[in-house]
Image (cartoon, rainbow, N blue to C red; front, side, top):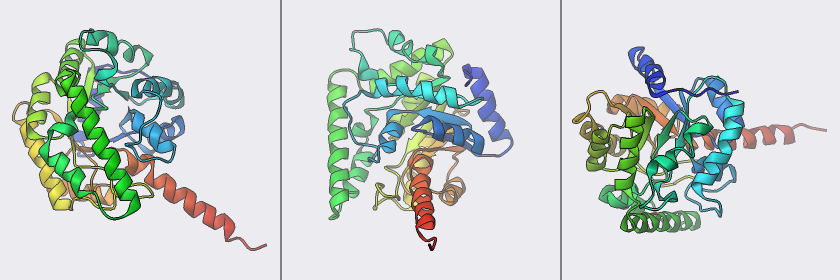
Length: 304
């Protein structure tokens, strides 16, 4: 059975990694089994967001389901809390789950009592208001049929984010969520897509900033087109510098783009000030695809 941690306890674990010069690893696990395996492998955090569940269905992370992100996360915690022993589980909270007139404390209380040790602002409307990120989405479109589908899905995601922002449940509401969590002593791991967003999140009291450099490349349903190492690293560092200009102790995490394998993150650490990495598809999808394909082929290669 899992364990719930308070903000100070989680930060102590993460800062211990930093003191020992070990990278922080957060794994976005889409099932109890994947969360269990990640903990055994040495992950420092489990981030439970609805995209992990989507990936386990064999779909790209951006695919939409009939069930809401919040419902998915609250259902999955039962499996992941039961499957883990001593690792903090951070939940993704969609601020648009309640109206702008409702108290965000009530939304937080739908999650934290279930055993979560912190929150993330995910799904987030931040993507839609970063010109760099929108340009990155445009760049991912190509002539391949799959890439066209992926591109169409991402554009729909950006449009939905704009609608949320227009309704008052966008990034400003996510900042409010982070401020409330800081007052309540709840750890916050936040996504940012521009220097301005990173700075505002740091001002709101975020504990960890995750700079996003696009969908993860590779695997069966990943992006074929992505940024180069140097382009992605430059993007991350701009956000890191903005966050650190407000809070020199904020923890810096990278995510996405060309950083899909352990060797890729080695380059990320060489080119940026990143202190850790959030692995979604990089652990929750690509290794599973590779392992099942390879093992299936080995079974089939046995001669009768």
